[in-house]
Length: 399
Image 1: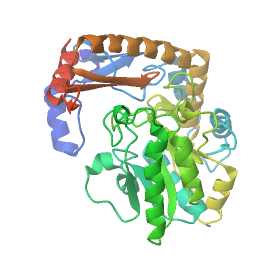
Image 2: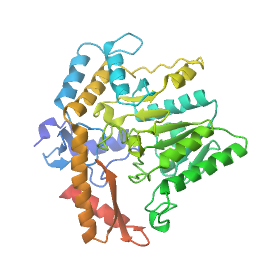
Image 3: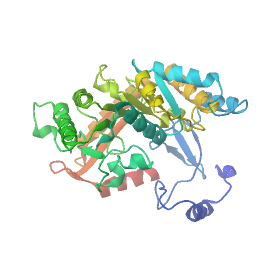
Image 4: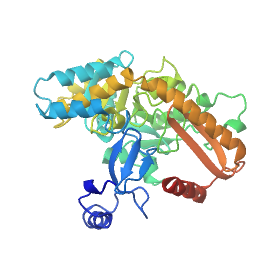
């Protein structure tokens, strides 16, 4: 039992939440939410001591309450925490470690507190460097909760009209997207989807407007665990650069080795694919709020030349930097990318075996520990099995 950790009964917690927390703040399992009291490694525990295998969190990257991460946070908090306008070793050592994981010329970073902050800053950098304004984004994308990011996140706006500076292109989903693999045998699906980006950019420029950036998650997460087809980013980047725009890769959900063999999901498309700006967050702090924007010296200099100083009160503070640096060290020391590959391959193979037995499973896709299962009532028509999916989620909670 974990009742000793409980300050309130579950009923009282729910009552206070309804009274004081915004109605739009979502809970998992809304009808019967889980009250989590503690967690360790891959498990979470409720107030009754029930153990849950955590397949929901996308922040406890090296395991809940990893002792090395906890130690780094506690020790630094006991010595100093302040803003980054003072010199401190943790800031530069964290930045050195982070940028060492990226290909040249991505060797400059800005430390912030969340993926939303990182993506908003990335948008500012792109506009400052390109001297252009508009953004091309993918359908079903999600890039954060700030006003600037909701506008480029169709996942949140559900098909509503976008500002005139936002241009939405089809998500490169070869299973149920605009172009489906089975309908175009032998064709390069990456090139085919990239042609839509080319056409949208041309349309924007023909109207007298300019494009500052193509903003995309390296692997689309909220939009359905979408793995872009081979060569997609190769062709997209060419079209984007020809228009004088930048490629921003959002790695907030999928970065830091989640895909296994690479640190970053954009590398799945080839070692020659190097974004102009990359954003990271979530797993960077293993639950601690820390995120970053990584870019080139040239782009960083363009931002400085705007004359607007960038300051972030908590971004790059000594505690956050100590935590983030430790997380990266743990990933390396414990060979967690290899682990993600091995466990991910086992999971994918097991799910594909189930797919052979159950018509309800329409598709299994993923890489490393980024895995999606598509449930359908008809494999030909690909009708989403929404009720069945909800039932399975509920049963997994109960079992």
